[in-house]
Amino acid sequence: MGAMSPWHWAIVALVVIILFGSKKLPDAARGLGRSLRIFKSEVKEMQNDDARSSAPQQPAPNPLPSAQPVDATVVDPAPSPHPDQRSA
Image 1 (cartoon, helix red, strand yellow):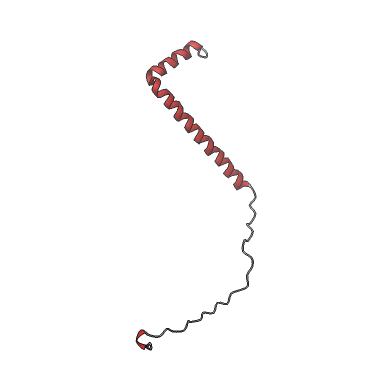
Image 2 (cartoon, rainbow, N blue to C red):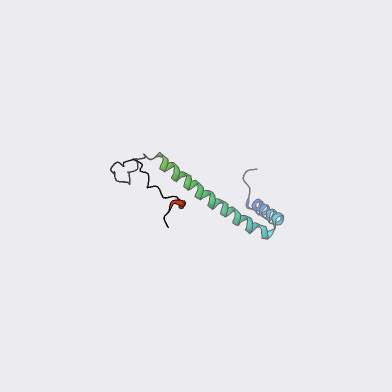
């Protein structure tokens, strides 16, 4: 009793068609295809992430040019006159 013969496979296929119906089988195959496509893209993305993380990372160049130091002295603005003290 080794491998299944073509007649065995035909009987199995007939039983599957009878159990699940001819309408549900294409929908199930379509869903399986979508799932495999998503799985394949996720595996590819994980491999790309691994390749990026294993590559030696170089420090990013400083995009800003070096600037002169800024004087941090705080200067108070001139006080504004109180509304009652304004000249009319």
